[in-house]
Image 1 (cartoon, one colour):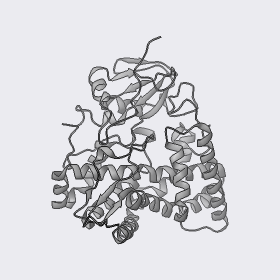
Image 2 (cartoon, rainbow, N blue to C red):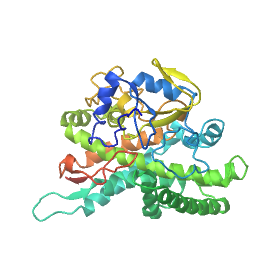
Image 3 (cartoon, one colour):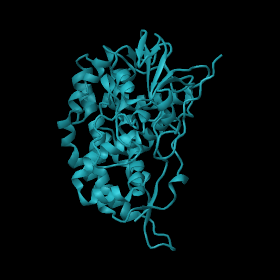
Image 4 (cartoon, rainbow, N blue to C red):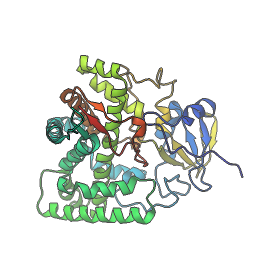
Length: 401
């Protein structure tokens, strides 16, 4: 039996696993082993990644035979989890969210995001501890800012009481941790779906101005989606809506602090921030376990024949460092045009919440650096504990100012 190298699961703090650059140059579409004898194809070049993600012959349906799942065993797909579906169900379920995630709707949230940032920074600077031997206050940026910021925003959008954040963040960690077994994941999902099901029922009786109320009133009551599907949609948004940005944020802070020339450029010209966020998304690419697909028929990609039923992993973190797509790709350059990066995917399944993530980063990062011009790390980045999940990040980020 042919032995294929394992898919890298560990990576440096700010860069993809080093194997990706080597494979992209030598064998950009190759077999890797993910668990047992499951050896899907790995795609590492930008052009090939876009081709696979845009091709309807590559299915995102996790129930298909040959799908390269993150674990040998996972719970059955829950109703409403449209990111793991193909049309027509994917189209039907995603469509119900479009009014709440238009660019215009997200732009209207910016004042609320700014308010949340100010309140969190007020609290962090008021409660930051001052060790006796130091003149500067210290805090954990993850606990004080980067985790509560997207959590508060998605709670406000959905209509989920933020006082329950410890509960849903705990369930989210169970979903994404690579160490979670199927029973642990199933228990976490059941707990979260029960909670959201009760909230959906309450909003159907007592609607408010929030997304869950609109799901209950405009979608479930009309029969467009079922109540379990609405709960699954809300669960997906609640988990994904805070976890990716919460992990992206501290890495962006570390990257800018480790590149003081780039941070100085942003301080000198705040108009660079929107483009800088795109560059940080490209450079860091926190969704580091790849986008997973299964071929539904024989397909040739860049001269490689992928057979029907074979799994494919699109390594977007490698594609975003492809020198054929981005000059000097390993450099962080806030003046670069990173348009077209694949941090949010590409094609039919491109992240529906990308405008919200951008707004949170575009508001939250400058707010932090403006408020705390002396922000610095209090420990070497190499010492930070990583999340060890499908989303790359750190568990804590000790800082002072």
